[in-house]
Image 1: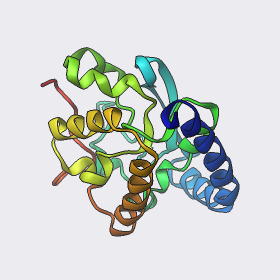
Image 2: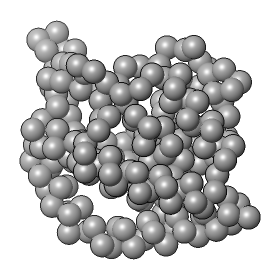
Image 3: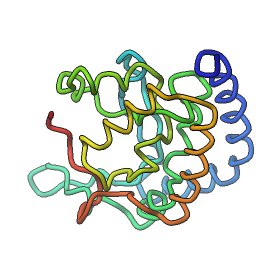
Image 4: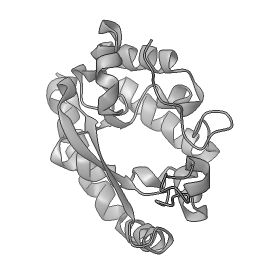
Amino acid sequence: MYSIYLKRVIDFICALLGLLFLSPLFIFVTICLFIANQGKPFFIQRRPGKNGKIFKIVKFKTMTDKKDANGNLLSDAERLTKVGSFVRKTSLDEIPQLMNVLIGDMSLIGPRPLLPEYLPLYSDFQKTRHDVKPGITGWAQVNGRNAISWEDKFIFDVYYVKNITFILDLKIVFLTIIKVFKSEGISADNTATTESFKGS
């Protein structure tokens, strides 16, 4: 009942109220990143959603497009701006995803949407994460986020898919708030971003 009907209603209402309430902050961050990223405040990328259906996720752009002398992109750490680092550390880069929730591509709570190129690499167990809509935050995020292994992330994701309840979602929201204030698990050790998934 909850996962089929009420979850979508709650997602829509919370996303709408969140966008309205956070609109001043949304505009401020957009302006700062517009300046820091040479006119490109948003990062738009194709991601697989429920049942692997591809949609376009919207996030704040925390890295520039700077390249080396050979035209290759610099490392993530070198392209991460000071503004972008703060936005990422405080999880403000996730705010635009409320628009994805509003139109129904995502949920507030669910497995994080990963990259399309990972789809062929999943085991049958790991594919289960696509039985529900991806979320802005999820069970894996509050249990280590990018600081845990890919295998552990998938275990947490599948656990969530098989145990969705209103109480579990409330717990994830509460733990997410704590994680954001503590800035825990934002990246893997010694890296600006998490390592790519290469299969089990």
